Length: 310
Image 1 (cartoon, helix red, strand yellow):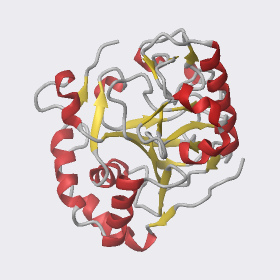
Image 2: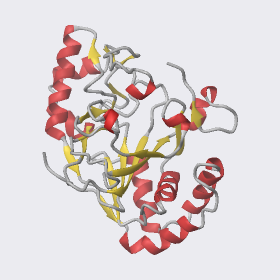
Image 3: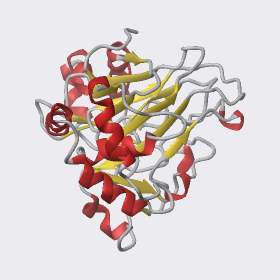
Image 4: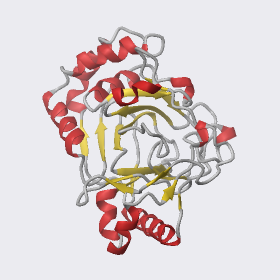
């Protein structure tokens, strides 16, 4: 698996300016989350022009690799992670929470937990996290997943693994493409949304490819998705092989913010050794949706927490 191809945006030259904008967000990111996100959206207009341009282009067009890595941001254990997530996120979509995920919090601490180490969970470590579209089963899945690195894996074994549909598509035989566009696949509900037995294919039926025929989007979950027919299962196998060949491993360093295009790339994580000594890998995560109003029927008035029941 190759490590860290382009695209990378070096934000070290903007660090002081971004730090000032972060410091200007006076609301508390957890106790006053709606006000905090609003302040960040207004401050986002003052991000450096070069960074705004890179985010604008990625929001509209994505890229071949399905991710954008911002390096050198003012992220530390003491401050800055939530502010950077909110500022960057404001240029890409609307920050949203899910009621079943950490009680609807907009910002998530991702650290290894001993009780989760063998599960298909963001808090696992011994188990590699299989390639998946984030919340693949959800009618209002995220458009982007943001991961801010507060503290990297001391053993340097943890890689965020990404495979984009634009890299995968040339490796999928043409005969399977019409099959992948039909609703012949059933995915599973995520562990954190109640699927504690990791039951496969207990969620909605869908197609794997959707949207443009020449430049499609992708919904895929290696661990929880199954085909409903023999050809569908064969097509899903072709996707699995193409995804494995297209994988890029991204090591995250302190101050990195990884933006994953959840419509055009699947992601996972390699296994690593957790020590549970207060120095393990620590990420902050946020979800974006392209249109929060689409989920309005499943949100309370004035909230950005999606409460769809499963």
